[in-house]
Amino acid sequence: MLDSASTWIHTLNHSGVNTKSVLFSLLLDETSSWDGPSALFVPLARGTPGSSYTRSRREDQPERVDCIQATDMCNQNPFCSSQYRVMRQCLVGKEKEAMLDNNRDCQAALEVLLVSPLYNCRCKRGMKNEMQCLQNYWAIHMGLNEACNLNSLCKKQRSNFIITCSKEDHNKGETCNKKRCHKALRAFLDRVPPELSHRLLFCPCQSEGCAERRRQTIVPDCSYKDKEEPNCLELRRICRQDALCRSRLADYITNCWTTSHSGSTCPNQDNHQACLASYARLIGTEMTPNFVDNNFSNWTISPWCTCKGSGNLEEECMNFLRHFTENTCLSEPTRHMHHSAHI
Image: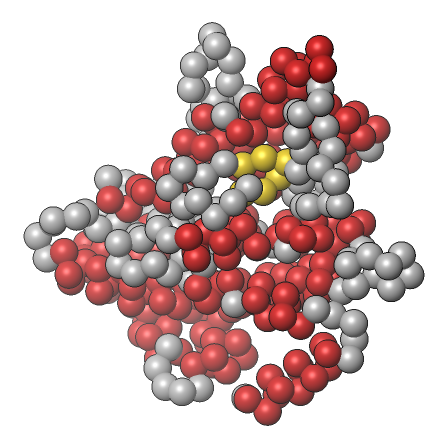
């Protein structure tokens, strides 16, 4: 396995790709949501006790239970329990990377467990048998945190955008080709199921290191930043000139924006995930948003723009920027994903 990895790195070094950036980004799925037992993350996948554990049943959202109960529920279902045992075997031994990456039984077990009660369980601080609950939680999430690498489509699309966004554009003398990077990002987000892609974008963090890895998910040096930071109203004008960007920005505002009359209630209050999905669809457009820094407790999301120098349009500019920086409809469900394991 080390020989094949060395060969792959050698190939990258001779293809114009920023190898350091690629390797750093590919490590995200291994570490981005690992800050220890206190960083309990409840992913977006759903399951129903006693269901057939198929994708078609994900709309049935059960009441979440603690991980001890979830383990018991899985053990009582022959199909779930058998797949749980398979996954545990996939995580044993020195060759676990090869097993997780290539073994069809491991892939099938993952698909089952993604929609089982185990994947949506929680542990309460100070609860009875807390340590057992945490052990059960990490027993399943140790494997599921590698879900993108275990899913061939997700892994392929993610590798594509990382390599594309890390490759220098020698023709223009640029560090990368931003248009190609955006296209690869859109392909990833359009083709990969949100329960996988959203976990990369909104992974929970309780350290600056984790928050920085999360910020680096979309390879921001290419997809997000530019040589100069434009005025937000100018960026909006450019976005509105492009049909795709214009429609996705309108979709984001429709699903996410709150007014003084609605308070903190989302327009789509019965489906907060619509806001997160609309946010994700902006990635890969001129209005690509991202985490602005590695602050893990009081983070801010914004497109790459500023309101400095707006003159008498500063208020209009700030009002537009607040669609991102002070959007409770976006921030609340995202923070809920980060902390709901301890509710």
